[in-house]
Length: 70
Image 1 (tube, rainbow, N blue to C red):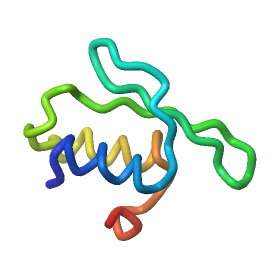
Image 2 (image 1 turned 180 degrees about the vertical axis):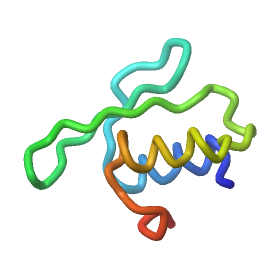
Image 3 (image 1 turned 45 degrees about the vertical axis):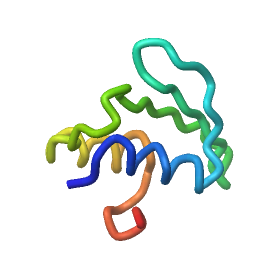
Image 4 (image 1 turned 180 degrees about the horizontal axis):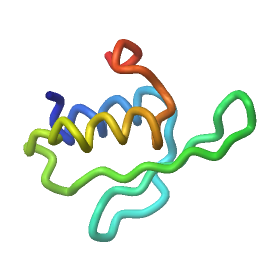
């Protein structure tokens, strides 16, 4: 499973915009189809993302399949 640091690096590499940092890092991106996507990343960057949460992040927040996360 990826760690929150892996997710943060991927978001930055894929052009997501850091909106704010409070209790989490909050990111936003405009998808090619016009949808506005939002996600948040735990400040505990070294912590591994639990499998169930990771599936929800991929599907509901990032809108990608696991193979697209590299």
